Structures are given as structure tokens and as C-alpha cells.
Amino acid sequence: MVSSGAIRGSRVGSGPMGEAERGEAAPRRAITFYCANVHTTVLSFAAEAEAPESWDCPRCGLPASQDHENPPTAPRTEPYKTHLAYVKERRSDDEAEQILTEALATLRERRASGDVLY
Image (cartoon, rainbow, N blue to C red; front, side, top):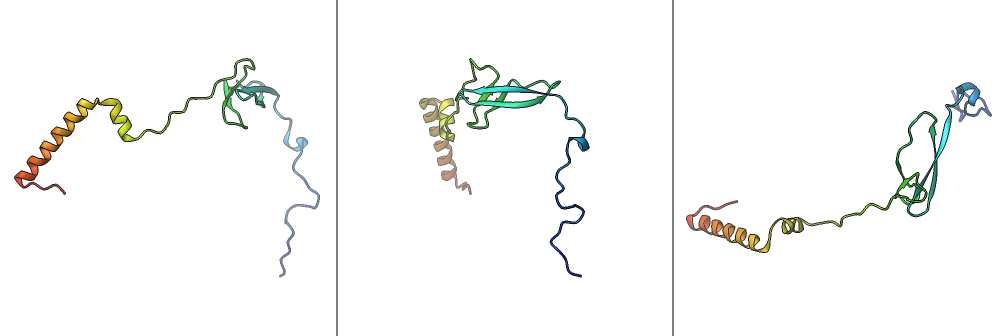
């Protein structure tokens, strides 16, 4: 049997089901969101659904709100910190010097007694 490239189960010219086959759409309302970069986004929500306070702008990714006069500001991003930066936040230079001195003394004692750490 020779296979053909035709799609089985559909007729030529058939399209997606229309509203008559699906039923009527739920009532909707348009909500406009504004971001700090003066982008406007209009979204449709169900009439009975509660609209969110904020929405991410699809153009720039900043948060957007429904308040045209006072759009939310961009969130502050913290730069990447190394482990050493976090340690320096918790310890002063004097504390670090004291801890280092104690650790070196402990290490020297172990080496002198023959205990080897691997």
C-alpha cells in the first residue's frame, strides 16, 4: 500500500472550531499595566477574576502596575558577593587575625605531635 502525504481525519479547508462549536466566551475586562520605562501592557481577565496588583512588563521585564502616575520602580539588584566578602561582613580584621593565629597554632601542634591530616 502506498502512503500519501494527506492528513487523515480532516477535510481540505477545515479550520479551527469557531465560537458556535465551543460555546460563548466568558465575559472579559481589559486591565492596563504601566512600567517605569513608559511601556503600556493591556491584558484581558475574566470579569469576575481579581486582577493582580503587579505584572512583569513583557518588553523590558520591569514590574508594572495599574497606576499610570506612579509605576513601580525597578528592583534593586545586589552584586555578586564572594564567600570572603560575606566573612568580612561578619568578622572584623582583629577577629580574623585572632582566628587565624589560633588555627595556625592548632595546626603546628598537630604536626609536631605527628598527627597528619589528609
